[in-house]
Amino acid sequence: MDYMEAYYNSYDEDGRLLSRHGQVEYLTTMKYIRESLAGVVEPNILEVGAGTGRYSVTLAKQGYRMTAVELIQHNLELLKAKLDGSEPLTAMQGNAMDLSALPDDAYDLTMLLGPMYHLYTREDKCKALAEAVRVTKPGGYILVAYCMNEPTVIQYVFGLNKLHEVMELKMITPDWHCVSEPKDLFELVRTEDIASLDAEVPVERIKLVATDGATNYKRDDIDAMDDETFAKWMEYHFAICERQDLIGASHHTLDILRKI
Image (cartoon, rainbow, N blue to C red):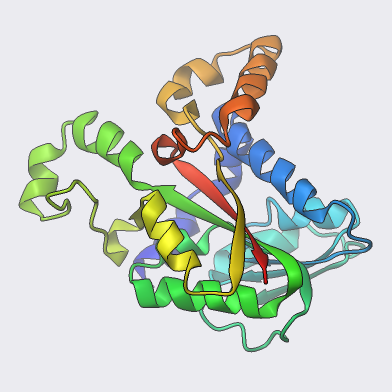
């Protein structure tokens, strides 16, 4: 069993996205999924790295035709357990870097909302992105989520007093870019890293969005908000989540691409 499988066998990803602070990322991602599907009649949607199905199952229950690919068997079993058999969803085990079981130019929307968190080399990231683009129809959208570098430096390295530890382990570069290996579970990027990957595939960027923005810096405050205050927080978040001067400080981003 590898590090990632061990992690997801015990981690409650649904619980994270259902928490009040996790709802910000979820609601933001759903907003841009719907924007990407606007005007598409009976869209065919693929989610690669579907996890336990928070997005795929929700969309399938809304009537969207879904294909869900997930690497971790435990997650796949949890995803399937949410289905009653009436949903237009096909679930399969697979790797984001090799979608050879799926045809070219098949999907109106392809989503990678987790795989880039766990790919540690440029080569692997390029493979996953290229595969997502390959299976997407010309003019279709590709949504790619990333974990960002600066929040970890701010909250983990300095906030949790881990500076000496990460320096001794050589987990930080002189320009403060975090260095990750599979045992560290998450790969962290900067906006320029994302742009560099995009340049390798035939796409145009539509938007780069901060899916949680300042939320995780204020996690306890967000979780304590009443409904009215949380609604106002979401209103504020949606007003600023596309501001490029704030993107790199978000814990998660969503790269919205269109296949050329």
